[in-house]
Length: 217
Length: 217
Image (cartoon, rainbow over all chains, first blue to last red; front, side, top):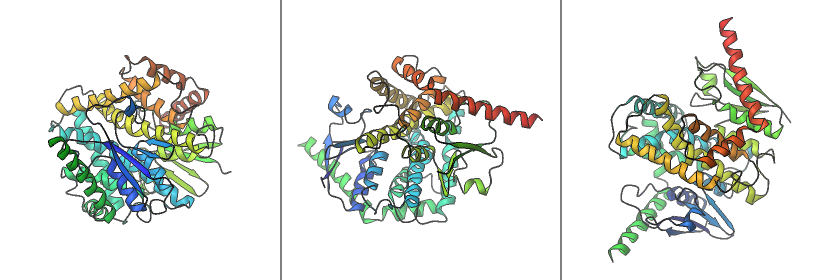
């Protein structure tokens, strides 16, 4: 089997470090024990070669032999179909993982990422729309807390759905918003204690420290 | 093959009509020519039976024999795996549809749905966070316009990815935000002119008109 190649930005500012989307792919590949390497694409100067792989100028994308895929959700599904450590192959187990994979992205992250844009902007002004956005996130977090109070992982054993959900909730927790949600915080702690996450996170941080060193040289 | 059953809210206010997420499932099932029926779950009083099917208290969910799935993205993928009218079965074509399915949900709709929360709230106050949210959407729309200027459908022939993207852009267009983006407006026009969309939309509108009639009786 050909190696998997993750392409991510060759450098990013301090704020997103530890949260760049390639961490989900690194984490999945570590869980699966699949061979991979990581390459950089310019952060500052995004050219046609980048847009031809990722039409929004974002990262990551994955190459695997002749295959090139963008969207971390699509890539995680692609990897999950190649490792029982990420998704069980039986139809019922597979459906359950896939619905929770989409739930992490579309029910939780669709609220949390826009909310984080306001938090990163230092903007806490409670306009009518902002109140409704906050309520949207609060509802999602409330329901996730109910779910996580009753299970260790989202869909049976640990799966690719947990990679997305833990990473999505980790961003919310960064701003202290999970203080009242103990089951969610415990779930993040379980996920981030896994050796595969720890290695993925350390490797992403080291990747950008090396980029700093090159810029300073 | 068992019939597919879509469960959606038994009634909704005027504003979301024509945009309730079940429209994506109706549309896909019409394109595929698969047999289905639509059932209602209470909008006003969401109980345990609802949360056991959809943990966020949202709609739709799909039942198909012994299978019950939530998240419209996951359901669309489930349907696409059962119809070449929604996704080609070859690996390269399938990957291409899946990456664009996730792109509609996670690159476009992750910006457009939160933005629409502000629009529906009548909130146009340009706070720092709002400016960044608007810029997030504007970037996604700009890149989609580049893509749609060069192709009829996102991934070869019409696919489930177009169902999501057309429906996502349709919401943006509702607020006039696509005025400068002709290729995107033409793409929406192509999608919504399809007989399967027209039937799905008319059926959803009729479903809620029948609900009004029951409430008035």
